[in-house]
Image (cartoon, rainbow, N blue to C red; front, side, top):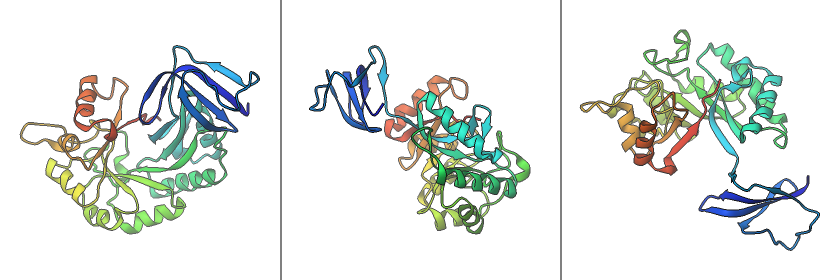
Length: 283
């Protein structure tokens, strides 16, 4: 199917919603998006048309925090497993993702990073969701907020260890979840803030410590409302910093289980659509 048109659906673009629109695909790329019936110069009756009446046509999802799914996990360090995961993700509209690791031993993390890097160089992005990078969730977190992570393998951050991980990962590490209050976190953040997005998570940081981390280069919050210090009227915690600090983007798991819908609505109202990222955090 080298050329086709999806018609009659509600089309979501970067800047608008078209109630009755079309998307023209040619040679694997979007050639045109518009309102009404497709009447392009190249239009012929022979071009296949897909009627999307009553449906939504949205851009492919980019999942910046996903460990696995469909029986696979990035930490398994399986080439075939990553391929199966990537191929399966297309069925739910995810077209690219950051393969996400866990807090395990350095050897296990390295095996996972090496496998992701190898797969990424050979992947076929036309038949599977594309791995566009790695989210290193831990091991530089707080042992007091491990959540689903393993407390035995928590480490303190260092430039040397991150450089070592990045070398194994062939430069693919894009986001690191870290606890800004632990020893050497600030020094590591200062040294590497221009190379990697540091995301506050699995942390017992105070409101002031979270805001201080932003001053030193932190830009992100890992799964808001989960595995961090909550809001109280005298200590707003990481949640309060996430709501109010314009320098922080926020991940959220919006499944109705990890966070109450009212909490999601509150974050969306305070942060706005430009600073809220929906993630699956799937395993």
